[in-house]
Image 1 (cartoon, rainbow, N blue to C red):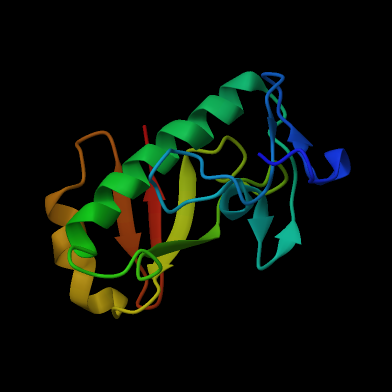
Image 2 (tube, one colour):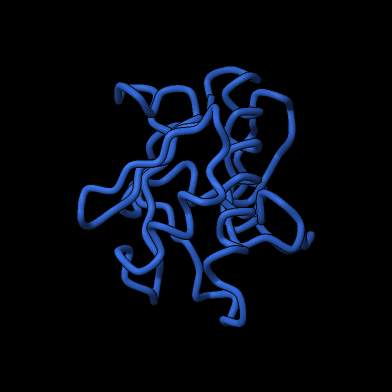
Length: 137
């Protein structure tokens, strides 16, 4: 990150890494740390444990992989967008393995079957008619 960004703008994660909210979780990906730590643009919490940080990183990797299947040929901003991810006070979202999301430009109903084809055995993917809920492990 630029040395011209205020140090106060960075989050310190349990691993000791300092990240800017707009930093990509994975290089060449679409998901930023703000997607995992904010819900409806409201800050929820930093990961409480190194394990939660690792779960967020692994879950981001899977969402990026699923995004590749449903966003082929689209612009980078036309992708899966998390709505609710890490929140240590919300049941089911307290470890970083669950995320609710939808697609920025494609109706969820149009991509549900494609996402199911690429879901792994140990994962669950549900669709309630408006958003997806993905749980890893």
